[in-house]
Amino acid sequence: MQALPGPALATSLALAWPVAGAASGVEGTWCSGGEMMHIDAYGIGFNDHTVCEVENLPVALDGTGRWTSPVACRNIYATGYDDSGNVLIHEQPIDGLTQITLRAVENTLILSTNDREDELSYELCT
Image 1 (cartoon, one colour):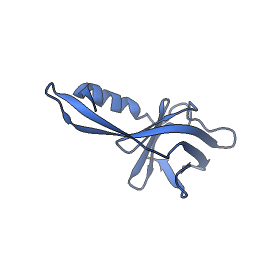
Image 2 (cartoon, one colour):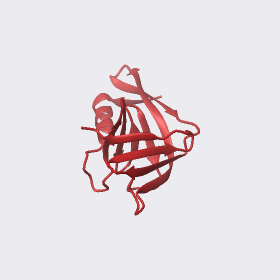
Image 3 (tube, rainbow, N blue to C red):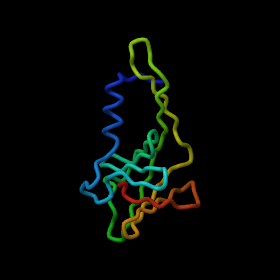
Image 4 (cartoon, helix red, strand yellow):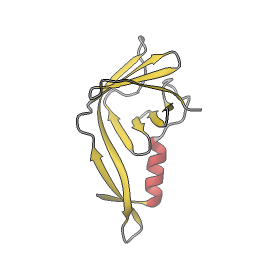
């Protein structure tokens, strides 16, 4: 477990979540029911605690409307504070998830992974 000062944690999490409308056309926050997918120039994150480092940057669709990359994903949890007031962080690698594919269908991004048979559909959050 590692410790981060409270403001550093807030800043790092804020930087992990992108701003909609960025250059690649897919950067932004995408929603699927109660789930969120965050795409920025540095990778992909899901909901509030899952971060994926991607090999093929930027996350941008090719001429066929697809993007695929090897990934290394982990869940990140704040578990409390140390005696100095730093936030204690626990990281849990997500074993088995090694590839993510995105494809565009109109205004929807379809997510598929190597470890799931079903696909998830996301639309830009409003």
